[in-house]
Amino acid sequence: MLLTVEDIEGRLSTKFSAFNGELDDLKLLRPTEPVLGIEQMEKQLGIQLPEDFLSFIMAYNIDNLSLGRVAFGCGKSYPSFIIEMNQYNGFYHWWLGDNRPEGIVVIAISDPYTILLNTLDKRVYAMTSESTMDEFELVATNFNLFIRALGSLFLNTATVDEIRKEVGADSRTEFWQIMAV
Image (tube, rainbow, N blue to C red):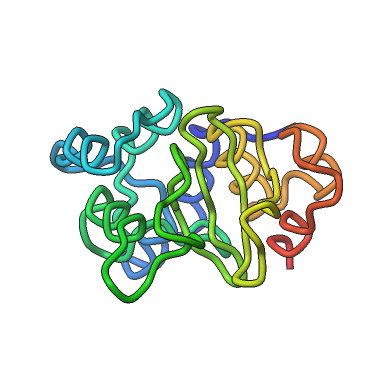
């Protein structure tokens, strides 16, 4: 059974509190000020965030969060990170062709995966640099299940097989196995 987000928050706090703030990027911390820029991000990218993802980014400071092998943000405002990762900048973009697939945005990165949220069907997918646009791997049927599975795996409270089943992942995906290493 997957841990709740609140259980993950508590266990990460317990696990990393002894480091006196040095490892706070590995904890689910509550924001000290309101998260700004979400509406601008949605408008700029032409998306509407699913409620479970929106609630999570409002409840936790993920500007620099790493959970297991997955990194959300990079030390700057998370909405700014999302905009930067999902707009063509003249040099780099994660999609093939001229236009980003409708409703799909990068929400986190990992080695070797890029984590995608489909804001239309609310599912979480993963892709590698070798994936085609038709080869996204379904890793969870919604963001809440994804973050709970990621935390449960990192805290060793669920097996890869349990996670795959509970999150509704594609049976062919290697994502959860790789995240467990």
